[in-house]
Length: 76
Image (cartoon, rainbow, N blue to C red):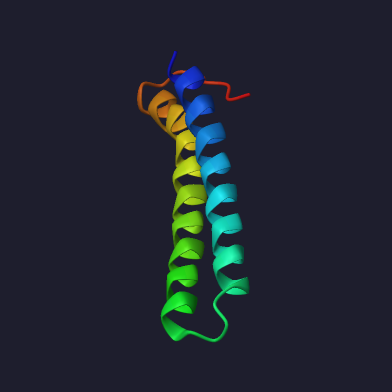
């Protein structure tokens, strides 16, 4: 069950990261040199990086929990 939840979280967070990157690209393209808009776009890139990091944690937590309880957990 935890593996299924981890897989769903991974997929949703990667999708979220892609959306953040697309929004950031749009904001960069439409910034027209406005420093505030460029700063906002940079924030979206940071949000995308955080989403990818959390997604990787979602894939790694089942293995960590399995090693804590001394069982083998296969993550597809």
